Length: 164
Image 1 (cartoon, rainbow, N blue to C red):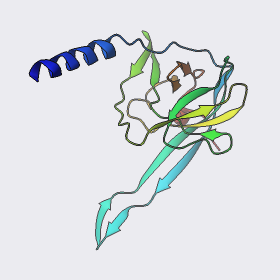
Image 2: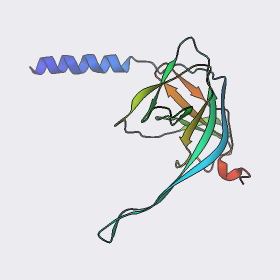
Image 3: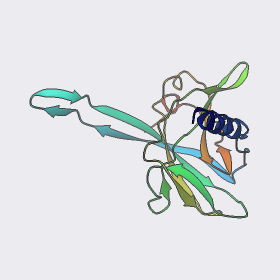
Image 4: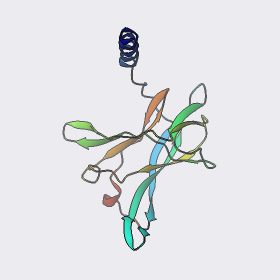
């Protein structure tokens, strides 16, 4: 029995270790448009605050891609009309040495794949409330599919924009 589990573990490790990262795919458009904020009030139970209030800043992006087939993207909910909130977003910030990734840890509980059609303009909501982003002069975000990664055009962090 121990041998079976050792072979199974070794086979699984080799299979997953051999996987390559999905290729980078150039979108037709993936551009920062504006910010939106969503505020969550504190949760109070029996006079005790069990969860503090929080405000999340989202970047709203125009997104369209061309590809021979419709692609699936990771998310927690299907697109609502032409709006979609992707998950497992990657972040890159620009420094003197070039583009550097910001490490992010994710939990995939409840995640599923949702289809976005090629040639359709979508609005993507991507959180910008991540540590390490606010000091960047420029940043890029991704929309990820099992078939490939799409990177946004570079844009300044919203606090450096003249927002109304």
